[in-house]
Image 1 (tube, rainbow, N blue to C red):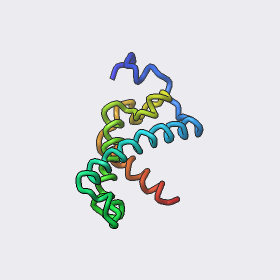
Image 2: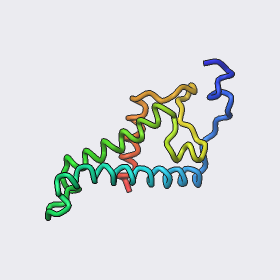
Image 3: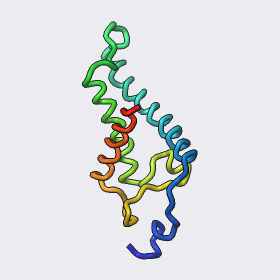
Image 4: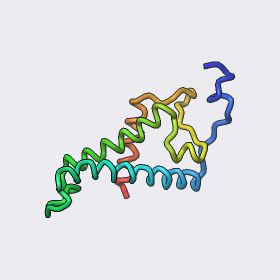
Length: 120
């Protein structure tokens, strides 16, 4: 990459706690909307909303929702380097050398985040 590349021309620094928290709130709202839509696409046609069994307890359904979350984060991180919340707060995710994340990097980041949230 050339030194005049926009990625290199911006000073890189880690965002503070409040900025990260704001990004989490923004992205959570967008992800919640996507998960709600994804759930409706499965639950409404199958009529599962009127049965006693709760579809959220089914492992395949949970895997489906996890896949939606994975596609949301990994897609944004690898294509644009930013999720919706990151874009709103002008934060970009790049590798140490300034290049965009590869899919492997995004997958490691996603599953590490899942593990850290699970520790709560």
